[in-house]
Amino acid sequence: MVLFTRDLRVHDHPALATACAAFDRVVPLYVLDPALADRSPNRTRFLHQSLAELREALRRRGGDLVVRQGDPVAETIRLAREVGAEGIGLSADVSRYARRRERRLRAECDRHRLILRLFPGLTIVEPGALRPGGGDHYRVFSPYHRAWAVADRREELAAPRRVTLPDGVRPGRLPAPPKGESPGAAVGGESVGQRRLTQWLPTLDRYDDIHDDLAGDETSRLSPYLRFGCLSPLAVANRAGGTEGPFVRQLCWRDFYYQVTAAFPDISISAYRRGATEDWRYDADALAAWTEGRTGMPIVDAGMRQMRAEGWMHNRARLITAGYLTKVLGLDWRPGVAVFFRWLLDGDVANNSGNWQWVAGTGNDSRPYRSLNPVRQAERYDPDGGYVRRWVPELASVAGRAVHQPWRLPDDVRRKLDYPPPLEVPGADPVWMR
Ligand code: FAD
Image (cartoon, rainbow, N blue to C red; front, side, top):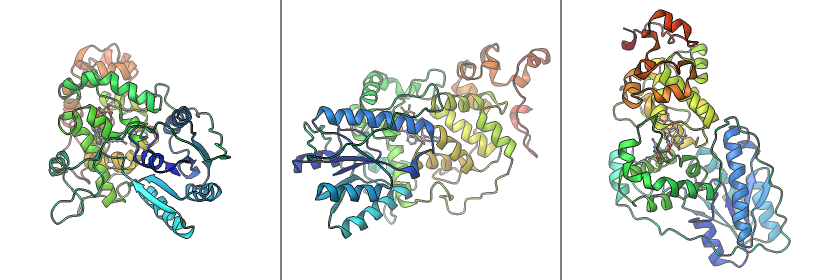
């Protein structure tokens, strides 16, 4: 049996490829886990789309995706016993929930004399494979990146040609994709991801120049497909230059946060950096204004509204919006993590919390006290204001970079705009208001 979790593909899938090479009969299984449902309507929709595609891909190979609903450990063991499985293969994962699921599955497999084997595939280099002298994981990105670029990699694997189910296995119903929350959300699935990769690759040579251009919006947008394993990160890296280049370096950030999370599973609840100061303000109104994209800081509101509209936000806007919540408003990063986690198609524990902690200064940044000035960021990365005008239509009539500081517009112009003044922070006198 192959238990799928967030590796929803047939290409370069070590557990599936190994099972199909070693056994005549293979049961690919996905268990819809009620404990993971409802956390994000956007991601649930993307998941169901991806499952439907995976089922199709397995059917084309003569097999099927067997779908069950309930506790993944109980359902997996029940089916394994029904079909008389010898063993279960599973891609290793790092979050606290996934690790607990693995441990429970191992205990049940031991009890029922089933073999459980964990496989790589969620990252390019496996979490824990690289260790600095004297430590169990890398805390700083640059040395990790140097080690990562020269680390051994496994061979990329082709999709199995045939998958044959044992007789009499009931495939089970795959519920129709639920409605998401974001009208402009990308559609899930392996072939959609592959197409997007192929279409985007000609941009690769320009990545270094364009990846921070908010209005240009030319990054790969592959993150949701990597999040659900519709794409193999190793296969993406191989097609994008292997070990070097600025785009592959971003894939290394992904691996970096996975190995941090494997070593520090509390990443979404506790400060990673020892001695980090955490004296956040409490301000429910400011948090709500930030969440809903009405802070009065146009670049921040644009980012938050993009996320709500598309289930995705540009990386530069994520840095600006997260920096604004924590370093400008002085609010705790944890509610920020939760808001992103609800909306983002790519939302996952390691990358979401790892990046938030980096921005908040509680994580892996070696300069934890740095703070991004949102106006300067806007002028630099959205110099003509096109990103803001796209997402904040109330400001569509304001030409050029003036759109980044509507509070400086003449009174009569400003009053006609249906847009709030910037939130005030008690005791703060931000430079951009002077
Ligand atoms: P590209 O620029 O095309 O990069 C290619 C791939 O590299 C991405 O798909 C992603 O897998 C990886 N990558 C790029 N930047 C990072 C990074 N900083 N950290 C880790 N991996 C990276 N990314 C997520 O996948 N899930 C999250 O939940 C998430 N939350 C974030 C929260 C905050 C506060 C910040 C600042 C960043 C977060 N990121 C997260 C990282 C990054 O913003 C997204 O991966 C990126 O914007 C996705 O767009 P893309 O696929 O076009 O990226």
